[in-house]
Structure formats: structure tokens, C-alpha cells
Image (cartoon, rainbow, N blue to C red; front, side, top):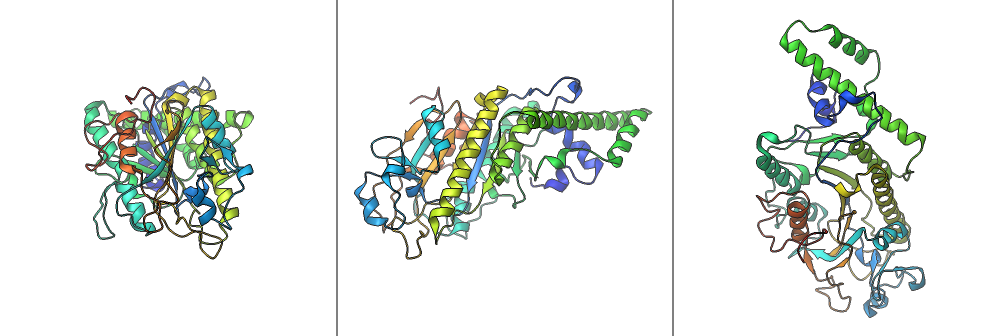
Length: 411
């Protein structure tokens, strides 16, 4: 099911009455400081749109092919953040390196799919749906949407009426969170959730005076819950302003802060989705790529640090992916063109840290592209089964393995 921010909160109190109590369940305790009562695991997906150059992200610095294929774009070895004797992170990823050293980051290497497409739209649709095919393939639902449908089927009457998936930002709703039965909503920022102004004050006063029949009682109670939820949000936001983790002022950093605030307010939504654009680096790649990787790394580190201080870090993991990597050989514009496999990042306290899978070989290519080492659908299967607890349906019928990427998973 698809909806948007207007439907989510909207200008209509009727719609909002239906949505707000579903978002947070602790409206009655506004006298106390906000403290999350959420339970269950949370997945936060960061879509690195445009095709990330994985070779200059997790750098195979000891591979002879690196110097051979990268002249203008070759990063100085002495500036790299080394992870082991052969792999290193881009110098802008100091925050990610800290997570790696702290045992809270897994980097899955050489992730892709068979017969990859170099089309942004087709490849992103493949990653979104977990279904392999060309641009003519019908993909009505996304992998997260299908997982949330299964989760609702498993939960039966016990399922929460909270939205299953929340997209942070103004982008179009990605296929990944489209579904048959579960609910996905879009949220631009927390201002949308702050119920202020004469209209809401009048509505709140109206609910206090309405108790003449059962319908009015229901509406009134729902309205009060919505108001209480908004109040809890206000308190959490004010707490953040008074001191706490400082988030980067980047767009992604601010979106991660919104997600953190929602979690701390007790939102029961299990999946959040944020998009970081700009990775289509065909020309002058160096400065753009460095900024994007720093934005990505700093935002995740601030987010996990914030959740640590709130006691929520064990419930949350972050997945970072891109629709494809870049060509191994740089082009003539100090950039790289569309390629195939690339790294996937999974961060959180419950992640089994380290490098996962074999590092792609730069002297053993397939038509000038990296050979895939791990099918992305196996990553999805590991997340849906071992993190989100969805066991009825597989993320993809073609998935052969469930990647063991969380502590407690059998190796």
C-alpha cells in the first residue's frame, strides 16, 4: 500500500487521527520525559543512489590491478585507512573505520547479481524487488514490502497498526517499500509531526468537550493520543537541542536524526528508508566521492552513538547499498562509468563485524568489470530471516543462502 506525507499526517484531522496513534504508543505519559517503549528489531536502509565506486570505497590497495587501472583516481596508500593487509577504506571514511574497529560494522565485498544491468533504473529495480530481469520485467512489489507483508501475516491479530515502513525525505517512494498489504508512508521532517497552531488547539479543546456518544468518545480519545504523541515528540526534540549527539548538518545526517527521534519516541515502525543521491560520478569524481563517503560514514556513526546513549542500539541495524559499482578502469573525465559489483555495509551492535566475502580481483575481470562474489539476495535473506524475523517467505525465491551477518547466527 502506498501513501504519502499528506495522507500520513495531512491537512485533514480525520486522516491524522488515524495515523498519529499508530505512530507512537506512549501518549499517556507526557508528564514524564520521553523514553522509548518500542520493542522489536529495526532496519534502517540507506540507498546510495547513482552507483557507488566500490573500488575507491573499500580500496584493494595491495592488488596490482589498482595501480594498473586507476591513474588519476588512485588514492595514495599512505592516506588510506587500512582494514587488513589488502583492503582499506577511503580516507573520508574515518567514522566508518571507527565503527569497524569497534566491532560494529560489516562490509560485504563483491556484492551483485548474475547478468547485471548497467541501467540505473533496471539495476535499482532489481535491487528493490530482489527479482532478476530486464527493464520489461514486471516488479509490482519490493523486497521490504514483501517482507512486511509476511510479517503481518505471521503476526495475525497481534500486529501493530503502526506504519511498517517510513521513507525519510521528499523523494518518490522506492519500489523496495511497496507492498500488497503493509503500509509505507513518507515523512519529510519532524515539523510535519508537530501539531501547533490555532486549528489544533481548537481541535484539542473540542475533544475535551465531546463525550456524548461512543463515536465521539473514540474520536476524542484518538485525538488526545495524537496530541500526546506530538507532545512526546516535542520533548524529545527539545532534549536533543539541549545537548546530546551532534549530527552532521548534511541532508543524510539530518534524516538519520529524524529516525533516531522517532525511535526514541517509541515509534513501532520496523523499517526506515533514506536515500543519499549523487554517486553517479562520471566526471571529476574525487571531491564528490569524498564528500559522499564522509556524509555516509559520519551520519551512521552519529546515529549509532545517539542510539547507544538512548539504550536502543541493540535493536537497530543499518544497511547501506548501491545499485551497482563502477567500471574498474577510469574514464577520460577523471571519473568512472557504470560497472557491476560493489560493497554493502551493515552496521549495528548486533552485527558480526569484519570483511565478509572475498575481495574482488582487479586482474581477473569479466569484460572489464568486477566478478560478483556474493549475491545481494543472500544479504537480504540474512536480514529478513535473522534480523526482522520473517521466516515464512524468503526475500527472494532465488536466494540460495542466508548470509550470517548477525551475532548469534550459525556460521
